[in-house]
Length: 233
Image 1 (tube, rainbow, N blue to C red):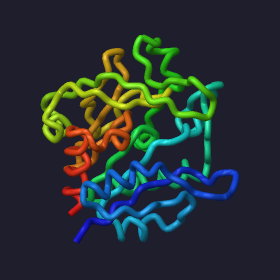
Image 2: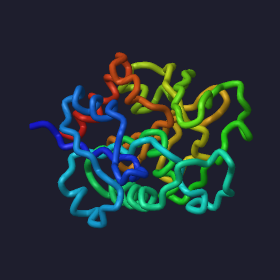
Image 3: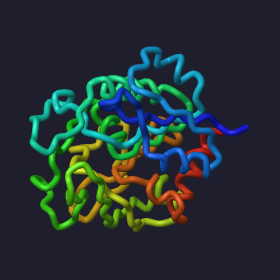
């Protein structure tokens, strides 16, 4: 039987609709999982998690800087309290479960905030622009950029993907400022931005700052999605 994989969605839009990029669903399906969308606002987190075999915390807008003691910034966008509350509770509760958790972009940041760690509010102000982590060519449009991430050769990620140098699809202007307790740094870009971490108290809990759903058909990321779904069986 295919494992049931919960995938968080974006917040309600102005038309009172929930949505999600289809690549997340495609990646889970193609890896052998049965995707189910999790919408912000659900109050019974424990009952929800009881029904799942795995969890994907997806990308999206920024978390409220007040959640981690950060200052507001003109580039902070798409803050939504309902989604923040829902995903922070999911992030905390899911680490007590035996199933795998895959945190992507915003999802990685949510894991850090849930553990009490801050974010870098706007990357260019700390790391410069030699490596472009997000291209803002037109307001409201996503323009993916690509750069290299170096993985720790001893990491679970490197073992799964069978590589230590990886080209990734990137669209973010924030990242975690430090690795939370019980997590291990396992991936960075050349400018020092933290790009991947692994939770040390569970066998398959991985967070990445890039967007593996956008490249789920390439051999390396296909292995990663298959490993996640296989761990959920």
